[in-house]
Image (cartoon, rainbow, N blue to C red; front, side, top):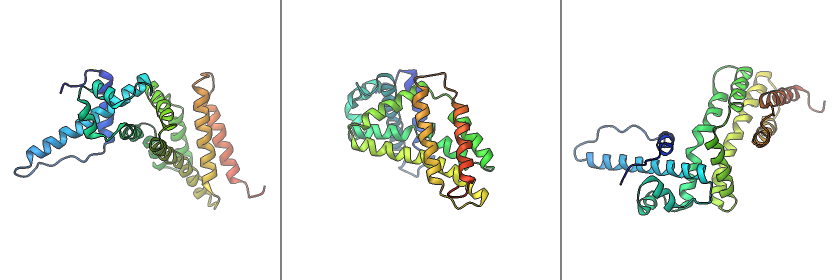
Length: 232
């Protein structure tokens, strides 16, 4: 096997390795060294394949996405790719999970971090108004296209978006807890998530939209609405 040559693949491979969440390995006992090395090498190969898949999707979209093309880009045999991933869909689902630390985890951490609603909402707004990397934007677009024709990809992507939306629900739950309000935070969080998603689509076509102003206005409006008595 020859190592991946593309700098983009190497860069994204580091992200893929972090996303595996594998625990550090301790020194193996007698006779275990060979197995540990083989396992570590297998994990590295799997991470490289995911990184190559990401590079292919971000560069060419879904049009040329096959396990054979991914293997060729990574510099491994087609059979090696199928050793780690049963089929094309398995590899796509692995990519869906691999990008989680780049868009969902930071949001979860912003909501779960210290401080009250005001501090948490500021962290969330800072994240939402930070420019998305072009590669990640293209990846999301390619994954959405693939989800149209693959139920497993659709289910995987749907679960990720449910997790993403739940962060906004958690933000409004913090607000309502502070106020001692028994209102339901779910519709507030879902409404804000829908607006964020729509604004991202608009922003991809019209760069003049002031995302921070729009989102801050909406967040303030929803917060105020949550404070009103029911039926007011």
